[in-house]
Length: 415
Figure 1 (cartoon, rainbow, N blue to C red):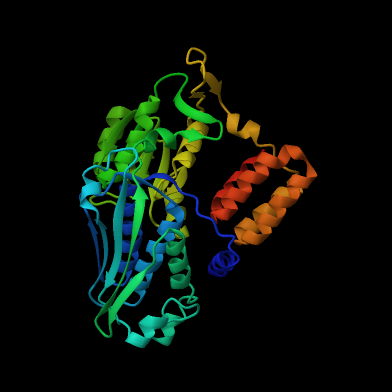
Figure 2: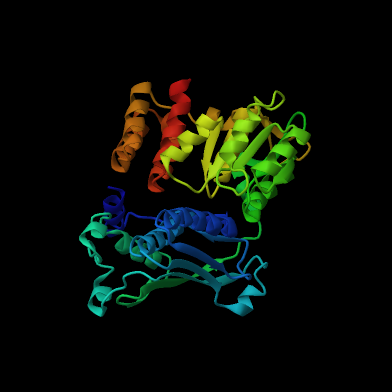
């Protein structure tokens, strides 16, 4: 359904890109982890080759770029039964790469998805980007809509490029495209700016956060956001180390990956719940896995909440505020008079009546983006006070964030 909606929006020229600054290295790691899970389920190898000159953060539509990469790599896994699938991300403009920390710099980046799968005949490759065009066995064709590559191509064209393909029948396929992306140097500062303003800290005692993840870049992106806000952050490379650090630090909150060597996040959480001093500590699971069962398993293990990777910083800040009962300090025009707020975002969003909230919630639960947009537009006419709420829902709907819409509505239904 979402594929058809995407294509309809593109053809009607209603699809828009929402470029923003984001942590590029963490994003690529999260995409790789997601595809690695799929590859392991088929007993094939997944390889990620990242150029050491890649910028830390860039400006792009993170959701749509992720959609394209996951589609290309997902297809590669689907049509590969033996061998490997490889994601290559390279800096093409070396001169630009050496200056990538400049504010006004852009960098040319090559994205390539390669596989050792069934491959395509020349006549198939020529038509592969046409709607409903599929290759492979009947069983494999039945696994998709035949729209993924069409949508991916049109999204990349909206980004100013195009996807190219070379393939050898029986040996494998390579899809690639290049994008010129602005380098983001102040991503950490801008990531802490939400609707209510720029967060510069919080009131009260210093809070301790433990970040457990076997990937350095995943830990780094969280620490670089939280430490400037005044949090005391500690790190652990797996669940075993996490247990040791947690008992020494006694953190207020733990953010943990689920899949790690030696001791994973599930087992670490179960152990923590058996330790008297830590049995009530807030634990937020974070994973690239989008499987509902993994989220349920994390809750059953004792986690309080779940965040998908790459971590949405605004959602992380919302959870920290709620679980730790924080009062954010916002940057103000007069630095001697900072603005304190506990529920500033919630106060600015005035929700519509409960029956309208339920309609939006039900539509979001089944992924009916069009129905969500209809309801959100309609409430503007009910009362001007609902404008901010409507705009927030419409923005999330445009980005196909149905799960986030459900979370937003749940806040007001629960109240």
